[in-house]
Structure formats: structure tokens, C-alpha cells
Length: 194
Image (cartoon, rainbow, N blue to C red):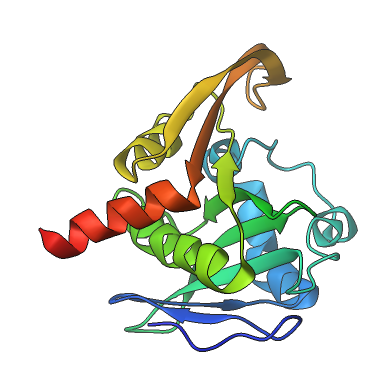
């Protein structure tokens, strides 16, 4: 279920288990800063743990405007607790770069990303007008790679030694995954028909 969105206004989406809504930069800081101290949480986001000040963490969200940068909080319906973030940065060509952070470990491995990301992708294609969404998880981020594959994203290639692993400081490859609007619509049509 999606509430009709207007450019610059907060986003509100809903799935069977989750509410997804825009966060202000201060809300994102307030709710997620404690996660920056957990190495496993931060590693899944491709960032180092324990090195963030409140100011530096806030800067990651400050350009959120519900036009081109969406910082969406993921809340479990049963208790309204914030368990994660889905972030989408849309460029001038209508291409959205996706990233997700599930900071509440009790929800790891429970299909949160697939359920939430499906709703976010529908929103980006149907209401924002994007033509493509994409993401680049580290080649060592197996849960993220699994989620992109499970959602039917196409693997477009590997960016060799594109970044540093936050835990080991070793160079690591990144995998490029993408989904085009027409492919998503075809996939959604198959889901409805099944």
C-alpha cells in the first residue's frame, strides 16, 4: 500500500509487516547513531564502526529532501520500533542508487530487505519516475548479494578492488546490480499471475 506522494513531501509506504517513512536528518541521527558502534551492522553497510561522531554521522543524512535523496525509516508494525533504513539517491537522469542498513539484529535473515525494497522500488518507479535502480554491495556482503539476486536484479559486473573492507582494510571488489523499470514491471506481472 502506498500513499500518494508529492515532490518534497514525506514518503509513507506500507508492507504487510512494515511501515516505511521519511526521516529528517535529525531523526535519522537520533535513531541510528548507536548502530555506528556495532562492527557487524556497519560492516554490512560497508562502513567502519566506532569512528563516527554525531556530526559526521548526521552529514550522511543532511541532504535528505524527499526529492532526490530519500532516507526512509523501516519500522515493524507490531511495535513501531525503527529497525533499519533504506536510502535512495536519485540522479538527474532518474536513476536511483539504493542502500539499506538493518541496525536491529533481531531482524537479520527475516526477509526485511526483500519486503521493504520491493515497496521502495515500486515507489521509485511509479511515483518518482525512475527508469533504473541499482546498488553496489561489497563482494563479501553475502546477505546483500542474496537480496539483490532474490529480487531479480541483473548482475552487470564487478568493480575490482573498488573499496576497502572496513574490518580488514584490504581492497575488496564491488558487485554492480541493477533493475530496469520494464523488467520490474514484467517481474511484478509474473508475481501477480502466479
